[in-house]
Length: 271
Image 1: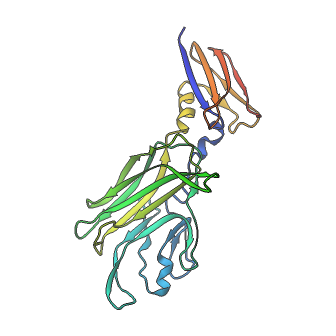
Image 2: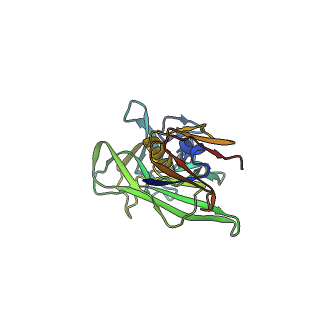
Image 3: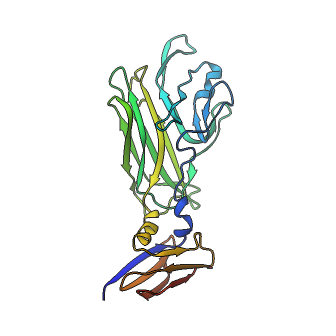
């Protein structure tokens, strides 16, 4: 008799749609706290325009009629009255660089497989822009966050139209992250080229924990309620036999049950 083993991380179904939602991922929401527009839930150096630093991050047309974020390299006169270059930079979270306060990153639940988005890139000469995402988990013993994974994408060829990038996420630990931080730079060259511009829209994190729910759906099962508080039901099991194994986030098996085709599976999730 054919047998399939499905491993379900406890809490997976409850957080299927909240695996890792990037705040303001499409850069549709903006505000103007000081002299320049700022993307909501993203920190830039635009606040330094108050002391003469150029505005290097602005709102521009998005790929589907909305807005996107544009990061540029600009020339400016520094405090020493010399020409200098400023790189467009933003980081997910909130920060006040004048007051030196910040709350960077955003919460995640699960281990996504892919980081993707849409970009345009242009440079008068050869320059390189980059977007980086890092995942971490708070370590109460060391009282600091442990880096457990991440990925990046670089842009150096002129792209006049929005082009999708999709970077696989690499993990150096089996731990489940609790925080992610995204960094975007219009240039990472030793000599940034003024006029270089990187436009980004519609960032997303996909795969990973969500894949368990997708696999159940592919088997034509009905899984409810979602989220599950005290009991989880799985109907319409269409294989000869299935063993469901439920583990906690540390990998410890907390429940296991065998069912046959046509049966209804009920799992107690109260604990």
